[in-house]
Length: 178
Image (cartoon, rainbow, N blue to C red; front, side):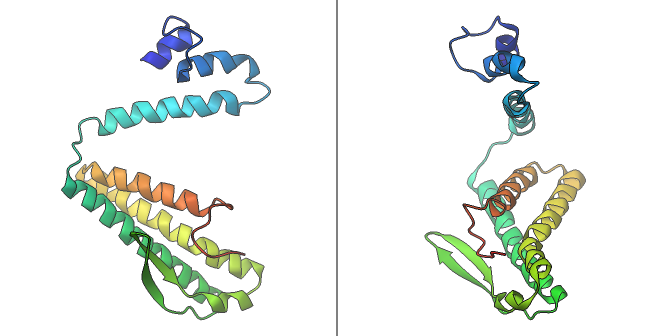
């Protein structure tokens, strides 16, 4: 509501930065750089959707453990994606294991044999994990639609963020480089 009022010019004073004032102030530049308007607009939409969807959810320790377990299962499934893509390319995947990275479990797959593949095979091996993340997201979304269990949507958001992080070239924790 505040963003809409600020956009119309009747909300908080214009010198106070809010999402509504950012969108209102950047309209004149929208034809040159659409992202200036698009980014705050998307944030407003995501915020409104989040409050509407998760506003009534009380996160107790059981739900937090459930969401963490879903993310960990999805992470293990992610590693199976690397192994499957390596095998599909004709290389032999090694073991899948787990280690502790500071306090968080980190799964890994030995795909060293994938380096003998051509560039397309290595890219397939690299993206196999993200593809399997997408499959786990679809499964959790289907579970949400079947049950209406809102914590599944929270797990979907965390798995989305995990998959997005794997695509960032400077913050790679995946370990697979083409």
